[in-house]
Structure formats: structure tokens, C-alpha cells
Image (cartoon, rainbow, N blue to C red):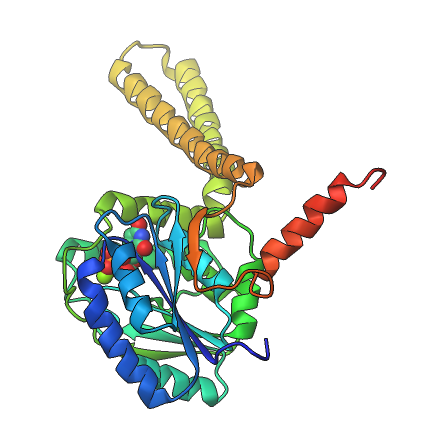
Length: 336
Ligand code: UDP
Ligand code: MG
């Protein structure tokens, strides 16, 4: 895109009205120092607190701000996908709206990008702003993910990052609905480098993610990047069957040599309960994957826009969407 801005800053936001003015102020200072043409794409993810009005006000003073308003709350991953699809810059920066991602770090990102790195990701220096439980769970998740998938997740790296146009195009091509972006960033490859930064305190409100939603996110991540949970059951089954055969042989021999006796009721109950539990877990895992396959085959769009402000339609229509239109119109042709 020869006429696009150099830098796109994509900010997903849900109910961040109180943080926006401060965010804009700090971001502007950074962009001024960088001195490159830029656009700021704000994705309003179904906010209910006047975030959209605030964005309109800001856009009146700063036309670099472009607004994508989703029709409801689709979640941060979908909001990011929307922003990435509409960004035109030669490099795209993703950051949170709550100032936990210090905008000043972007200068370092751009410096490394100019040196030839295609992905520059922010790495949190420590996770003090998170509770002990959160930190512990997150560590456990990273370990498990590394064990189950062949994808390397750099620890502490999140959505705060800069990506070259090539990387953004690659990400836009991935059509999966269950988006575990952290994994996708690694999966697409390219020359990556980390920059550590200190996570700021959230300026207003608490984290928009509950432990339950983090759990769902973790399950999404693992099921999207590993089939080991599906396959492990056949091995477990083999192991248990072998054990059962051995035990059966032992009972046969014992009965032939010493005769039959009847105790063993508790051990039977334990065995039944354990094995039915294991079977239900196996079924549950199948269900997790089946549900996701169902979501994928429905091919619903990742997000629905209510409004887009500041993007002139036509030449700024995202490529993926244009391809989709071509595909649907060619279906309509007779004999094609
Ligand atoms: N966010 C969003 N949609 C959601 C939840 C969060 O766009 O459904 C945005 C939120 O407004 C913020 C960013 O994603 O800009 C990170 O959210 P938050 O600070 O709550 O998460 P955490 O700091 O715990 O990662
Ligand atoms: Mg935050």
C-alpha cells in the first residue's frame, strides 16, 4: 500500500471512556517524536459507557483517529482481528487502551523494526499487577502449552507488539474462528525480537477478564494448537486394557491354585468409578474439539461492524473482504 500511513496503532477497547483522553495525549507525544504519518484505529468492542462518543470527540480534534464500532461485545481477540484487517500502515502496533502498555515503548519498537525485525513484541518485566493466583495459573498454562504444542510462546509476551505489513497480511489470511492470537503470532514465524517493558497500573477500572474467561481462553489456546488431548485417550486405553488383561491372568492363576474367594467389593467400585470418570473426561475432550469444529464449519464472521468512521470505503476495503465478495459473486454465476 504505497499511499498508506507508515504506522497504524490498533487499540481494542471496551468501556474505556475514562482512559481515552490520557491515552490519546501520551500516544500523540510519541507519534510526534516519531514524526511518521500514522493512523490510530480504535475498535469499540461493544462498550456501554460512552466510549464511542468519546472517540468521536477525539476524532474531531485528531483526524488520524479512525473508529471501528462492533455491533456488540465480540471479545478482545475479535476486536484485534477487526483492527488488523482495517489497518493500512506499513507497520501495525497493537496496544491496550488502559495505559498498561506504555505508549513510549512504541519508539523502541519502531527503532527495532527499522533495523529489520518484522515482529517486535513487548515482554512484561514482571506481573506484579496481577494477583498471585493469576500469576501461578499463567505460568502453569505456559508450561502446559509448551508441552502440548510445537509452538513456542515467549513468556510474558502478549498483544502489545509491532508487526510488519507482511506479518499482518499473513495473520489476516488465517480464517480460524477460535482465535488464540498469542499462538498465531508465533505460528506465522518471521524475524521476532522482544522488548521488555513495565506494566503500568490499570488507570481506571479492573481487568475486563474474569478467571472464568481466562480459563476458556486457555482451553481455546490448547485445543487450537494441539491434538494431543484428543489422541492421548487411545494410549491411556491401551495401557488400562493391558493392565486389565494382566490382572485377569493373575486372578485366573490365583483361582486355579488357591480356589475362589469373594472379597473385593470395594476394589470393584473404585475401579468402576475411576474408569467411568476417565471415560467421561475422554468424551468431554472430544466434545471440546467437536464444538470448535462446529464453530469453524459454520463460518460465521469473526465480528460484525455497526459503523466505521474515517475509512473511505472502496480503496480502503480490506483485501479479505474483497476476496470474499469475489468468491460469493462467482458462485452466483450460472455454470460456475
Ligand atoms: N477489551 C476488549 N474487549 C473485551 C475485553 C477487553 O476490547 O471484551 C480491551 C480492553 O478495553 C483493553 C484491552 O482489551 O483495552 C485489555 O483488557 P484488560 O485491560 O481488561 O485486560 P488485562 O489487562 O487483564 O489483559
Ligand atoms: Mg489491562
